[in-house]
Image (cartoon, rainbow, N blue to C red):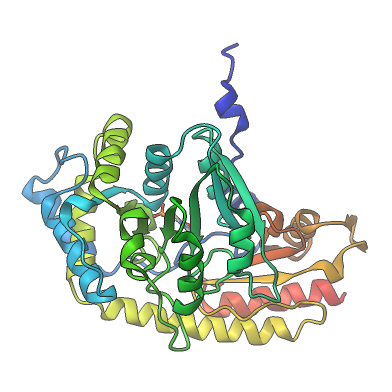
Length: 396
Ligand SMILES: Cc1ncc(COP(=O)(O)O)c(C=O)c1O
């Protein structure tokens, strides 16, 4: 038998992908499942983006590209930051990857040494802690509270800092909570980091999906002194409904981008050539598709919040970004549901899938016991059916 490495054995499979797979298995046995586990827009990639990719393929853009991405795309990313955030960066500071996930991996691998600490506000996106651990660094989880809308406070950040802290990771709007930090809140965190030499890794992948007039903040624009210590990550998966195209990017000081490029070159040579042309069309083409999807998500957010609030025992801070609601399910612990005695978020979600046929992700996967995450990237009809099934199950 081929032995499995310590690295592979220590990595947990992605909990959201695992929850999605369970729901799929149930579906394939003929059961109607309300699948709210995956963080994936249900929209098709806008047509003009698909067309640009098809044209690129027929033009013969099917070869390896420069490791860090094609020059015209890196320029388009800089123009997008300038227009969207008033952030000035140069193409040599940009690296395009096969998804934001690869950008985060590249960034951590380029900066962290074994034993370094990486501060992660909790709840956090499922992959953060494993991506950190894979570099030999240590995730330092800082638990936030629903009362604070799951935002890390400057005092908590200060307390978590140690001589070993290498990176502070921040994700706003946040997966799984759907909460967006205000500019002032982020500036207060930046203030704590100013006198240190800690690097900031800001995952802004949901930046185009905010509601209620909330503006997303690009962390790198907060303080000029922090720009050369900030790595900004984003991508096309969520805003342009492009999950399968695997397009993400990072903007960072040139020497960091060069190091990330060396790692990427050995791992995947370059990002997909055809997808890069699709991303170029996404960023430089008409943006009304984003506005339409954002408005649709906003309607669904309102609907889901209204319906969930009608279920006794469920509470949550109202999300104002991304497409998730992270709700408290502790009122249902230590209770019998069918043949399951629910004791924690995982047993709650397993029973919910098996008995109500509603697929959610347990809060424990995001480092926060007592909660469940629901993605509302589904049609209103699906959401209505799923929440009704959840309500019926919970209220017996
Ligand atoms: C917070 C966050 N960051 C990064 C990603 C990775 O996105 P992708 O690799 O599809 O670009 C996701 C996807 O779910 C996410 O939720």
